[in-house]
Amino acid sequence: MQCSLCRGKAVYEAKYSGTYLCRKHFNDSVERRFKHELRKQVDLKAASIKISVAISGGKDSSVTLYLMNKFLGNRENIELTAFTIDEGIAGYRDSGLESARKLCEKLNVKHQTVSFEEVFGKTMDGIVKMDPETIPCSHCGPMRRKLMNLESLEYKSDYVALGINLDDYAQSILMNVVKGDFERMMRMAPHIKRKEGLVRRIVPLRRIPEKEVILYAVLNGVEFDGGWCPYYERAQRNTFRNIVSDLEEQNPGAGFAIANFLDEVREHITIGNGNTEMKKCTKCGAPTTGDLCSVCTSIGILDSMKDA
Ligand SMILES: [Zn+2]
Ligand SMILES: [Zn+2]
Image 1 (cartoon, protein in one colour):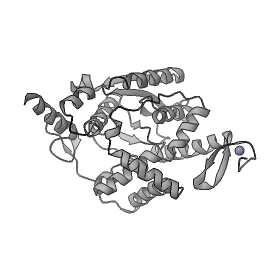
Image 2: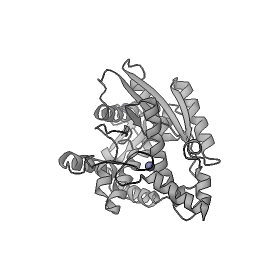
Image 3: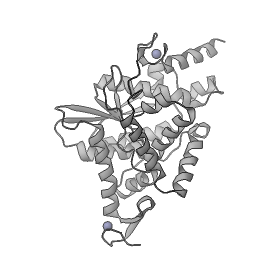
Image 4: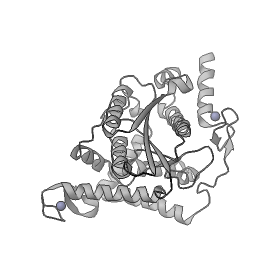
């Protein structure tokens, strides 16, 4: 097949736009969407900006770091750093961490690791043993978000960048719709406004479908760890992964439409748009909508299991 733009050899068919793209025009297309999101999500003209990239070593966060470094690495007003969260999952985290370290070294980006064990005194493997009934992600997600916050407060980062591709993003929107959780949907990243005690999370990859992230990594020599979390099978997200991929199959562009829909809603509705009154967790002081933050709630439950 020929590239629809230059008649060169096509490496990719973008079904949602009915075009075939050669290597150069595929790269251009991915990078254009990434830069557009960066400009929308970050005030790039500010005098001094610190951004930490949360890198797991997987494809999405590796490509995010690669592109952030490509476009922001030489700007005087921007400092890029990276960190990896070690959840304590044997056989999975080690290879991701290795891959994250290598990429940071190659790009000359400062990298740091922070673990569940050192901050919470628990590993995910230990938590799953203690509480085999609960879906592991429901402990892991809030704990990871909390570490991200702590980490970026320590680095004094203005933003933390997450590797969330279009498929992930559309899944999260639908998950919130199905749970009927409007507030949570409105609080999804990207966070434009600063809130006390919470770092703004940005998601510059959110308009790049998963397939394109993988192809971009391969074409541009971005090495990543292809391992899957061993607890993945139990994630609720899997149902939504299938739904989004079926929708996309039957109606190319459905993923973009879902993401655009959220942007439209957020533009027109201000209620709950990050305006929820935040309280402080009575135990750890973290911002929360209830009395206890979700991590302190989780840890309380786990500790009561240990004592029982
Ligand atoms: Zn071309
Ligand atoms: Zn707390």
